[in-house]
Image (cartoon, rainbow, N blue to C red):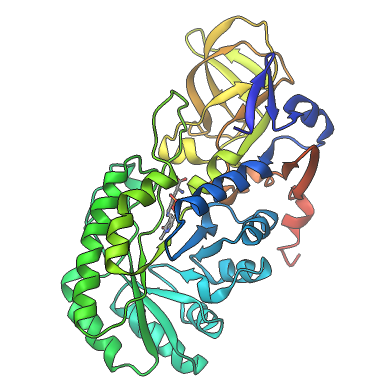
Length: 414
Ligand code: LLP
């Protein structure tokens, strides 16, 4: 692992985080390990050996351009959910024909842009199919499309990140399959190349992927029997990571792929997989500074400069992120809530954690913040989005500047 402790100090690869913190002028900041990104991507690459497969990194998890370029250079494809994500994917040199556009509310402008670039597009609903048709007419080009099926499988995760159950807003109504197939068949511009499902995020068992693949294979057979030459089976993303660090045995990409390998081989179909969190989640920490500690007599609070504005997952999903002081601390061991300075009680990064009472200015790291953290940050309380750095070998490199008030004020015409 790229983040580890040695003599009480937290390291990122070969560099001591405390030394990095004293070099970096801003606080808080995101710190990534480039090596860990490579390792995580390569785990998928090794897992798909022997299969025809596209690893589509879900850009929504983290869209830092340096990270995207790095993944593209490693051979990754990209999975998108907006026109702007297509724009940044093109800037990072991802091959558009191997890029997939998802979404339940794609606009005609986004669809036209995607079709002009020959991006693979998921059909999510009746109106989405009609919009894709309109966009093909506008672009005067064929669109390669996949049907997003709703597998109605419970991924056993937080309801906000569960996407493949019957009541989810994503995917077609499966009993309307014939209508979709007839519409595609009668359209001159649509070319059905695959089917897609995405069960949810933070999934911890391969059985869930296996069940979905079995179900999807039935759809493949039905659709093929209707005369379509399906090339792709897209099983979405969703593999969880070890946020809790209590030695839980989570499936690896190899275990995931091996659990469905036989089905793919017997269908003779190419796999598309859309990992986000499992590629980027554990590659970063948020490095904060302790502003002070206080107590209400019952509860102890460590107030740090990071907050729900930089990292909303704890507030939004009650998500657990591990926290650690980045250096040895002799303070008394107590139970703390780690909170930010934002004027809102929902502003916390961790609750009820044992921590040696830190002194002001000490560094406090929040672990596993590579996925869905910086991308979900906001300007609430006029906090500016934090900068990002990565460790590349022995070098510390800034890969995104801190947003500043000037950037913010630029948006007003006054
Ligand atoms: N494909 C589709 C169609 C998706 O909707 C998603 C994520 C992915 C792939 C990537 O899933 P991953 O491998 O990263 O789990 N903001 C939430 C996560 C929302 C994920 C939504 N969909 C969080 O912070 O946990």
